[in-house]
Length: 488
Ligand SMILES: Nc1ncnc2c1ncn2[C@@H]1O[C@H](COP(=O)(O)OP(=O)(O)OP(=O)(O)O)[C@@H](O)[C@H]1O
Ligand SMILES: [Mg+2]
Image (cartoon, rainbow, N blue to C red; front, side, top):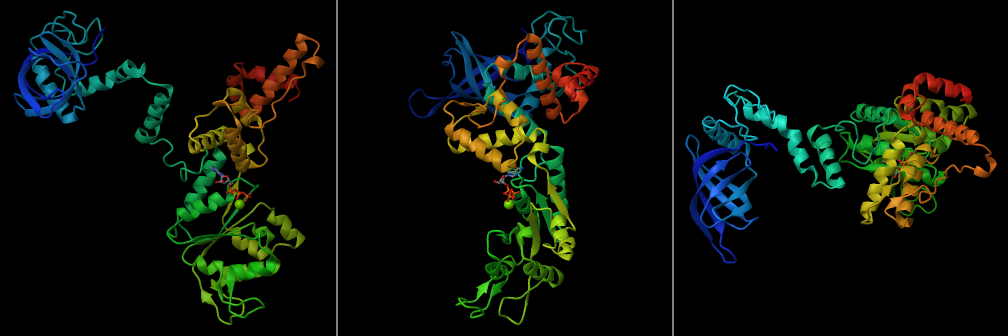
């Protein structure tokens, strides 16, 4: 088998610096490299060291001066030992290459596989490596060319987790894939819908305009509001949340705007309101659709003049607070019914971010489920994965409670499941059951499975016929004719 680093015969003196066995102190002995490559060499030495010992190796290169590197004893014999270099830096490598190049010149065989070759050959006929050593970029080109083989030669030692870590390292650290996709590492998703949301967050965050966030319950409205705050100039100032549905209207006014001492029965001390707390920062009014029209008017006034007036006070205070509001209600219907002020709606709706429900986020369902599975498994010091059936069940379920429902089901599954693999039952997801007793013939079984798989594939691929054809391993015309056959 050919080597990945060419080796050549040399006569290079080397000082070996070794820790004394068992005792303290080091000894330094003189020996010589009789063969050398960029990754190791053979040292002629009358008292060889035992395998795996780590040594310091100091050598002088004719044109480049002195180098000291670390080497591990790979193999030891009566007359010497083979050593593998550790962490040879780029500079030391290039200088060593410069020295090796001179020595290859005298050797008529391929320095990779040992095959005799005439010097005119540019590529070894046996191992295929390039032999044009005098090209300026030879070593860089060879390292690029041999990179995959280098990984391959070690890959047998990788566990599957190592492999994922390595691939992930390449994607995230080297290629920076996804660097600008996520708004922060807590906000997960790569569907077009959520990427649009990330893009809107990035656009609106640096401005001061109010934002209206809409979307079903559990879709991430509060998370979006926080992401806007964190990406704004206000990020070091308070982010104050208030849930308009959770506080009765009479208390909510004091909560939002504050009150003076004695301004109403029970107002024993004066109180600062949430708007004032959020001065310089952001106030997030959750479930704004639940506000009374009276308080809607006060909010509207604030948006117009930025002045907050405490209950019982006859003067106002100028406040610099950015307003973000959220609702899962359809405010246009509320306007039609007279329960929401049209003018406030238009002030808020200047910039609307609508969060898509999870059922419309394609592969995000599985990404989110895996994200929370990792998160909760780690918290509990467990290692859990989803079975293929669980992945299918996650994909095929509609998740009416959106991300919050994914969180709840996954967290419960991590706690309840006894095995490392999580099944659809652990997730409490209804798996479609086939009632075989009602099926009388093979034709019917086939019909039923074919139809079910087609429905699943269409849903999974968002009705994209080319994708469905690929997933099912059939042609596009076949997908069309199956749709016709099953009236889908
Ligand atoms: N894309 C996402 N990635 C990771 N976690 C998310 C994502 N979207 C939402 N979450 C998490 O899901 C939970 C629900 O999100 P959030 O409270 O922001 O939703 P909401 O729309 O405000 O819900 P509700 O209408 O019920 O108040 C939170 O724990 C949030 O951190
Ligand atoms: Mg919320």
